[in-house]
Length: 271
Image (cartoon, rainbow, N blue to C red; front, top):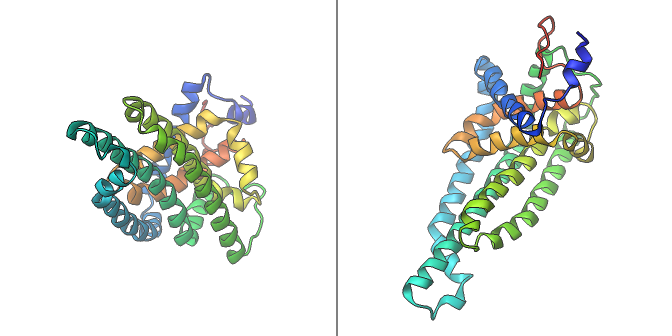
């Protein structure tokens, strides 16, 4: 069997590739839980960020009624039932977009706080898989600065995407069904881009490079990103899954670049 072709051969069909991408998160979790040292490395920055973002989202929940009233002044003279209905929809739109932005900004902030920790997790994953082909040396502060700048760019783009999603959230039924699905897909894509930053930087590749390469197999990238996004919505999920997501993103990067995601000596899996 040709090892190189089996690594790069795509799973047949977009749905199969999507679930293959989600499986990379499961493999990342497996790598993570079998390594107590990695668990200790990854949990501290996620706990710090998690505490901050839980407090911020709780504040949004507390004031969501006031915010809903603020953006729906046209309903002040409506009947009580109609006014309450439109403000419930507005409140749900605020919470939905707030949740989307919280997940994305949580990832950006946590990666910035825990850059040395997550760099080490990613390095150890690559060491187990035979090392990093094409690795380049990058100064810590320069790497951190580039990571923060790229994360801010991704957050800014996600905010621009979130505005029309917020507006669409006012549409009855569609705003409560279709929009959350679109939000998960958009959030998953940006999460995958953010999380894959560390292993791409290790190879001297910046945001435009990883955007282009991950887009080449969008279903796999979305499968991984959406799986992470859903986990991050679970209470404490972001704190517990974040380090495993970094490990999974390292696997995603290697697969995207046609590099083995199996330890040396182990037969390569057909995908």
